[in-house]
Amino acid sequence: MTSRVVVEADGGSRGNPGPAGYGAVVFDADTGAVLVERAEALGVATNNVAEYQGLIAGLRAADELGAAEVAVRMDSKLVVEQMSGRWKIKHPQLQPLALTARDLARRFDRVSYEWIPRARNAHADRLANQAMDAQAGNGRGAARESAGGGAPARDRPPSSRDDEAHRGSARAAPTAARWSGATGVPTRLVLVRHGETEYSRQRRYAGRGDVPLTDFGHEQAAAAGRRVARLVADGDSAPVPVVSSPLSRTLDTAKLVADAVSGQVTVSERLVECDFGEWDGLTFGEAAERDPDLHARWLRDASVAPPGGESLDEVHRRVRRARDELIAEHGGRTVVVVSHVSPIKALLRMALDVGPSLMYRLHLDVASISVANFYPDGHASVTLVNDTTFHPALG
Image (cartoon, rainbow, N blue to C red; front, side):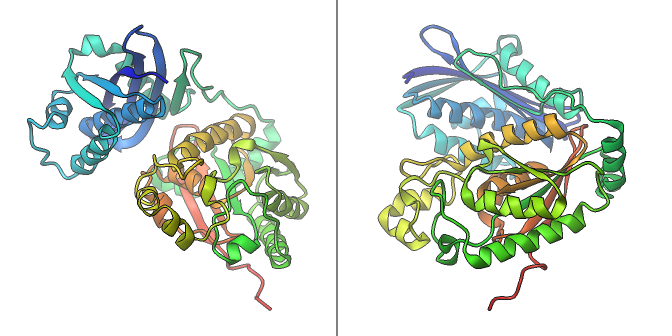
């Protein structure tokens, strides 16, 4: 734990509004050592929105480090004056961001805000520009994180593919690209949630507990496999990769899907469900009764974790790395991802380029299918959400 840290944050937009990104770096206040770097592209946004997002990312990083005192330094006079309470926040886009930043600031014993010249904010500025460069499609990953003074999280390398797989993927490229301006051959992720379990029937939190499929869940998974086979029929001629969470309910679903598409299952630990900690196995009502204040906060703040568990922000960062790994290995192809509700929502959130509110507002049924496409130029599209038209009838 580091008790005193300095957060330097910046954001920018090439167009205002235009392609935007933020950068944030956390230093040890005593030694000056870099503890965490974070940067992410934001799609189209204004300078001020990007600056606030950089501040939020820096405060979250400081909170995860266990800091008690935070000194924030930014070259945005507007953000510093508004967060210090000296200027009113009139713009409707900035008001919710400022509220989020203030909620995070309350977690520390002391937070101060200082304006610094841009030249002194060069580290965060560089990270923000790298995120915007990545969004423009220069080959670097659109999101970056590093910790403990080590190397940054692995940037997304260019993918390799043979000519036949490339031609097959080009045939399957979604028409959404014609409307979004996206260029290049997308990596198409066919997202399959596992079939029914006893926990899903009873509406219980099912995180890392290895709850098996019911008999009906196996039927749903087999039907999902047939539906996926139709979705990928005009794609690659090579076997379709099927990548699964390591838990049995997803692995059993993935095997049935792989049988239908003549694919082979591999496992990604990063695709496992959110760790619900002490709420695992409880119903929604039981968790709310056990920890009413925490449960209520968890339902509105993605940085809040269940007792002994994992926050949805942590899930998002983990799944973002999984996505980058999938694109690095299978770029330009169709990949079937068999996972759980939280990781699938996180992938759809990335493709839609929206905030964490999607995690609370989007419903995904068991054995449902969604499709997200990620383009090499940074664009993305969602072409299918929560398809259950193929489900077998009950009874």
